[in-house]
Image 1 (cartoon, rainbow, N blue to C red):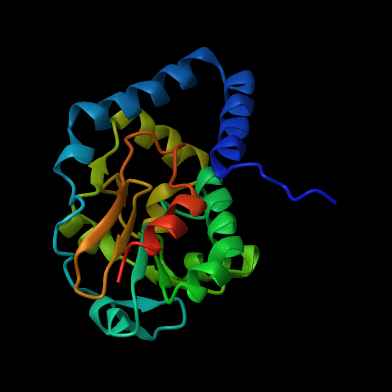
Image 2 (image 1 turned 90 degrees about the horizontal axis):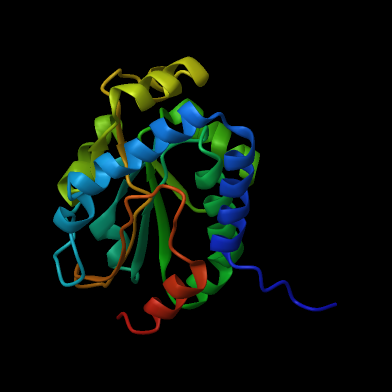
Length: 219
């Protein structure tokens, strides 16, 4: 049987096309304006870039254990990624794709840490649903994400859709209407960022094979 060579972005695009086919014009416009607001705020430009020193942090995983970035870096490079929440289909597709690549990441000596603003109970649900075997850490109020510069403010229109659709504030434990980009970094053992994927459009994510390739150039 031929190996499936479908890229993550192809899968995400299929989800996007499905949304565009079903959603009404007002909802599509509101979401498009939400993405444009992130572009206008220059979030991707002002976020930490390749060559920057990654700030250390200590966060709890879904079971309550504390995980420190710099402690993990003592064992090898770290892939640091953000997902918006288990309510986000694009995030879920990305988490599964990264899980599939996890053995190769680990063969390269790297650990994968996923940060999310959703509560530990919700992140545990995400972990169990998608059978994730890497660390998922709750970043309350996006505190760590803010130190990396990857947080943005939802427009009021998008916030209303999210609140009415699935209850964003219940997922995050606040009603601030802030979310992280679907950002991914590769961080070397010296704490320096060697790869950065930053995109204002939440439907675009780092390709797992590109992250793997970045690891070969990271010590």
